[in-house]
Length: 156
Image (cartoon, rainbow, N blue to C red; front, side, top):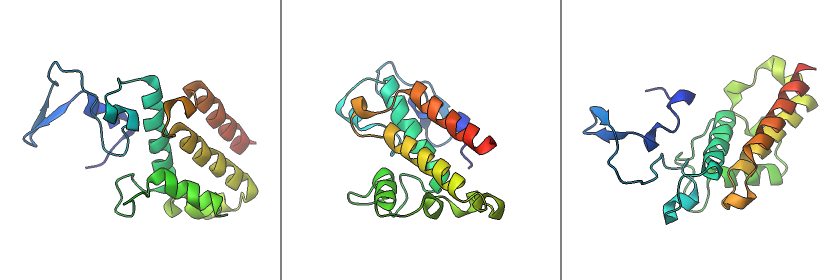
């Protein structure tokens, strides 16, 4: 089974029945979602919110670039996808060392500092989106602005 971006978030609307099909959820208003993508505040009963969507987007953005899921077996105890990336970047690792190797081509590595700066900004944007506290998360309009800056920088 291959996940696509369009599949993301469907868990909130659909429930699996006996592994064969889906049906509409019951009338209860429970936030559902995939482990690792659901923001922490949903676990304590908070309602679905734009800040929760930003959290999920941040996790997805990080996953897309480092090629690891938040449920990967390497993430156990207190180590999460976000902490892994934070630790790597704060320990001096280059973003090009963290990013999924199949994502980078020899030609893209020739971009050197430009690529490094762009990848750092993308990973830091993902981390800013996936903060534990909703108030500390970026606003989605700021996320769009930052990612547009990356695109423009790469197109120069």
